[in-house]
Amino acid sequence: MIQIIEKQESFSYFFKKNLIVVKGVFRQQWQIAKSYLSNTSIAFIVPIVMTALPLLLIRAVGVDEQLIAANFFGGHSGSISGFIAIGSNIWMLMLAILWDFSTYLRDEQMTGTLETLLMSPAKRYSIIAGRASFSILFNVIISFFATIISLLIFARDMLFEIGLLPLFLLLVLTVIGCLPMIGLSYFIGALVLKFKEVYSLVNLLQWFFGLIMGVYVPITSLPLIVRVFSIMFPATWSVSDIRAITAGSPPMLLLLGIKNAGFPILISTLIVIGFAIFWGIIGFVVFSKYELKIKRNEGLSKY
Image 1 (cartoon, one colour):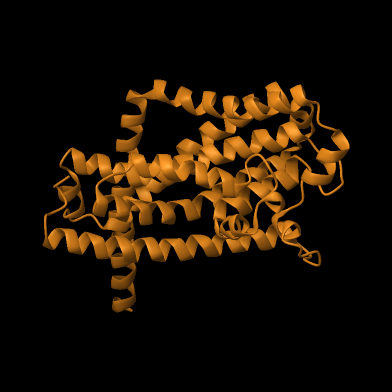
Image 2 (cartoon, rainbow, N blue to C red):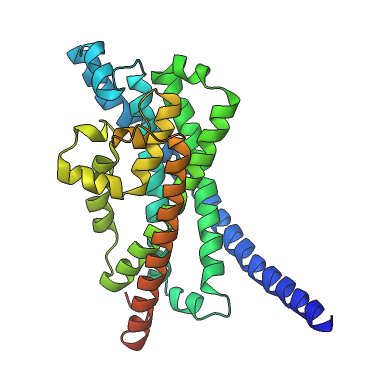
C-alpha cells in the first residue's frame, strides 16, 4: 500500500515537474510572439495572394466549368475557389509548423542559448511539448481566420454552407494534420544543427511541398514520381480530406482509387496519426544522434 502511494506521488511529481516546463516554454514563446505581432499579418496576406493568383488566371482564361468538375471533383460539382483557398491556407499552416521548430533551434543556436537549454535539468521532451503546443495553437488560430477571410473574398457561398459539425471536424483534422509536421520539423532541426543553414533549406523545400500537396491541382494530375512523394507527405492527406468536407473534392482514399473504404476520412485520419508516430520517432532518433555528435566535436553553441 505504501509503495502504491509512493508511486502515485512520484508520478504526480513527475507530471507536475514536466508541466511546469511546458507552461514555461509556452509562456516564453507567447511573450516573444506578442513582441512581433505585426509579423503575423504576413500569415493573413500571403494565403490571400497565393489564392488570388490562380483564381484570377482561371477567370481570365475562362475555363469550362464542366472540365473543372471532371478534373477537380470527380465529375461532381464543387467550389474551385474553395479548393484553392483551402489548399493555400493549409499549405501556409503546414509550412509554419514545419519551420517553427527548426528555425527555433537555429535562433537559439545563434543567440548562444541552445547549449544551455539542452543541458538544463529540463527534459528535452518537455521543451518540445511546450514549443509544439504553442506552435500548433498559435498557427492554427491564425490559419483559421486567414481561411475565413480568403473564403469571404473568393468563396462566400461555400463558407456560409459549412455547418457547425463539419467546422468542428475541420478543426480536429487540422490539428491532427499538424502533429506529423512537428516530428518532421524535429528531423529538419537536426539537419539545421548539422549543416548550420536553415533559410535556404526553407526556400528550397516550401515550393516542393506546395507541389506535392496539390495546392492548386488534384494530386491525380501530377506525374507519377511526384505523386509518390505526394502520398508519402502527411499534409497531402489532411488537405485532401478537408477539401472533401468543404469544397466537394474526393477524399484522399478515393483519389488513390480505393472506393470500398467505409469511412475514408476516418481511415485517412488514422494514417495521419501513423505518420505522426513515424516522424516523431525518426525525428527524435536523428536529432539525438546529431546532438551527441556535435556535443563531442564543436559544441552546440558554435554556429
